[in-house]
Length: 229
Image (cartoon, rainbow, N blue to C red; front, top):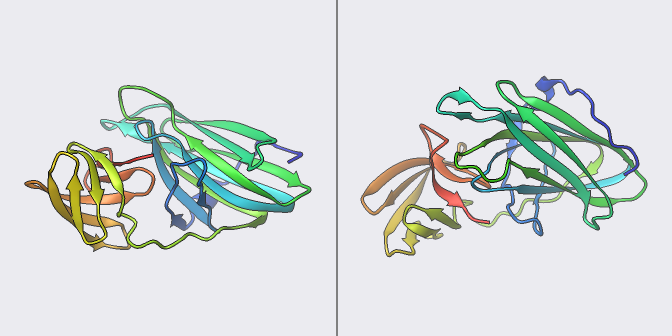
């Protein structure tokens, strides 16, 4: 990529209809970006998320917007580090967005001579004793193409970290935890990724945020089942 620069992006573009995808926590297996606006949520307790797309010869523009989460209702200035690099790792470009009350925006602009698989890492601040992160959006334009998101059943089927230790959500609607606790899960609202879970004697209403886990529907800062890397 021969030219990398920052430019101002109309926020309205990034706030257009967004796509909910399954963000990946694995650098060796990034999630495919899709046409339109791709939305995600990232925080320091879980870590960096990874995406990819295919860039072709010509101009490519990657727009990124980030809005920091609050802490107990108070705005907290939070940096987000976005790095773009090719799969051969022969070049990379990094930008840091800092958000307080308003969304921060940036872009990567380049002209490629060859077709390349491009990976984007989205990293919240590392460490810290309180949860920090926020919502971000990515939109592509120019000479790009997209991968296919694989359908592998209900996206909630996975293993999570929780109060009960590691808990596995199984495809048959049951939950088993490492400490012997069991439970059940049921999809309540597919469009909004809302689930009803019963674990031990606790009954919860939760929203699945890919790359983050199951959060309380009334307070998304409460992550009851945290996605594992």
